[in-house]
Image 1 (spheres, rainbow, N blue to C red):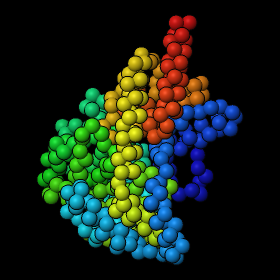
Image 2 (cartoon, rainbow, N blue to C red):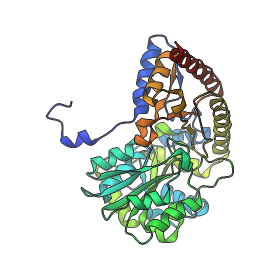
Image 3 (cartoon, helix red, strand yellow):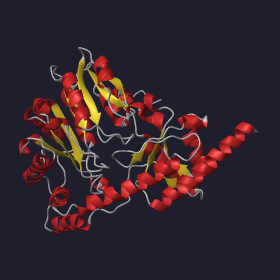
Image 4 (cartoon, helix red, strand yellow):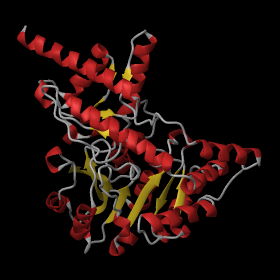
Amino acid sequence: MAPNYIAERIGRLGTESAFEVLSKAKALEEKGMDIVHLEIGQPDFSTPEHVSKVACESIKDGETGYTASQGELYLREAIAKRCRDYENINTNADEVVIVPGGKPIMFFTMLALINPGDEVLYPNPGFPIYESCIRFAGGVPVPMPILMENDFKVEPKTLKSLITEKTKLIIINSPGNPTGGVMEEKDIRAIADVIKDTNIFVLSDEIYSRLIYNGVKHFSMASIPEMKERTIVLNGFSKPYAMTGWRIGYGIMNKEIAKVMTLLMVNSSSCVAGFTQEAAKAALEGPQNCVDEMAESYKHRLEYFVNELNKIDGIKCLMPKGSFYLFPSIKGTGLNDKEFADRLLKEAGVACLAGSSFGEYGKGHLRLSAATSFECLEEAIVRIKKFISKIKLEKTA
């Protein structure tokens, strides 16, 4: 329990279990245990050399002072151009806000739109910070089931049943974390059809949009003309360009919301570093083969991992259509997901996340990250197989 001098609102904040498990895994490593890390969404690639080079040159040139709170015009124009050319989003620099990472767009959306008592539908299982931000803003989080039997997609009928007169915002995430599910054009349009005659806004988290496989194409809610003004797009550079530690992301939204988000930047982070913005522009406008190579590598790893997991008795796994996560069901093993994940770490040295840490509908699943070497994935399979065999022996003992 927090001391009584801590503000009540802090009690409404959640956390990310990935960092908690990482801490536990690191503690075991310090004691000499060998750990295979599958718990964190950290690309194992380096930031492209040409991107880092631009940043270093920018620092040498003195780009280390304050910048515009909305983001420098050159980067906002580059983002808007890419969105027009590749995402079919009719936007411009005035509708782009540059922020330190993707999470500020989540927080700022809640602070800009949600009044106490407003309901927000969010994917469950889903990124835990969605619910945390909703509660912090005084909103009412309404879980939206994202189930394996529906290919980890939003089911329009279920969505419609959850909407009330208090619904202010719907969060969609495609490709999804933790499931790897992707909503294609027909799925996004089905959601738009449900809410087209309402005043409900959409926060579309598209941070993994460059990591989609097997011919599936990304489609943004913001590309639908009648939804453009009511959609806030969240995206960034962390995942496609291996720039997690650079902390640079962006949002696309109507001009009025952009003004509010800029005001929130003024009152919080002030601005994003100039050399980081120069690097982001270089990433967008430079060679894109680095992104393609990463995506191809993730796909290869995912295919291997899914194939091997499905050979293990008690585990069932769908091939993700995007991201670098797998979300297998382990219900057939007889263990609940929390016990499975905890014992797998302590007894087998494989760090992963319990599905229920992403929401109640994640129960019976694990989240595994393939953003690690192929050799680590092979070793993880060996250890998981041995662990399952151990569980079976316990049952027959």
